[in-house]
Image (cartoon, rainbow, N blue to C red):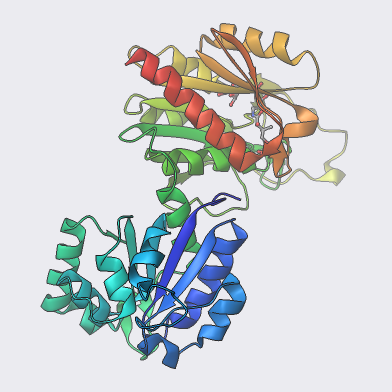
Length: 397
Ligand code: PMT
């Protein structure tokens, strides 16, 4: 529940994308946000207030003179109760009105009267989006500190193709979650490894491990939410990259090594979450091994480079954070790894807790000792790890 306790006003304006606002309200509510919906009269021609009332559990406001507000000041009361306002979809007309400070309906008046951040997700035909008038209005909104989310490009309801589609509700919700996080890594470049590696035996077989990539992807997402510029070097996993994260796909430890070393010197922080194979197959076959060729094939292993130790040894290299998955003696083994690799921080987890699932149990080890974190979803642990890194870096700056 990444938006627990956040009070969000969702403004809906008239456009076909209004139907997607219903999903946005559902997603925000699911994340723990307290959602209040306000609609323009135009929006009610696309979706009824009843839909939003059912999803938010609250009456929906459309009319500035709504008699349900005892003081007849819906615009003030609703905006004062909000931690942020997001208008999705935001039509060309609505953007024009708020760019000029107009207050000609409840939603526009609320936006003008607000003392909280405003995010808008434009949605319109591509010609309307490209029109110089809209460009001017959007530039003005950005200059006024309003966050413009999207729009996306693609096929439009009118059948044309181009920029102007509203971002998908999941992407808007993700931007809102990001917006609500403290930007403790603003301006930092963070390089992260995640997932397993795959060491080929022949073209179709290989040695790998049970890392799902969940922990590393959660760390990448949390670092990006904390304001960092994030590059994720990922072994083979089945997830899409977190929004706003630059992903580099690799397969083997050697490929991961090359991808990391090419970027490490330009990074401020390196977080090695990947479960990298310690060994690769020295005699990998060019063609598929055939059973009928006789005998049991012997697999000869050679050691892979230790990516984390190499990055930690770089002169003026990034601040290095390791992970350690152990089956026992977590503190002793994790601290030993931290010292051997010469890194300031390592996150220890037990194999049975860490591999695969959505939850984990982490203990952070640094010069000050052990910092156990309560068992939690990987997303929450990733945030705590990012905050811990930011604190250690503040001490160093
Ligand atoms: O992906 P999930 O299913 O969510 O699982 C997460 C996880 C259990 C894989 C993760 O939380 C974790 O613990 N990752 C580290 C696994 C491990 O024990 O690595 P290690 O002990 O082999 O290596 C210690 C550290 O050195 C790690 O930061 C590793 O990325 C790094 N390393 C190791 C070997 C190598 N050749 N190069 C490295 O950079």
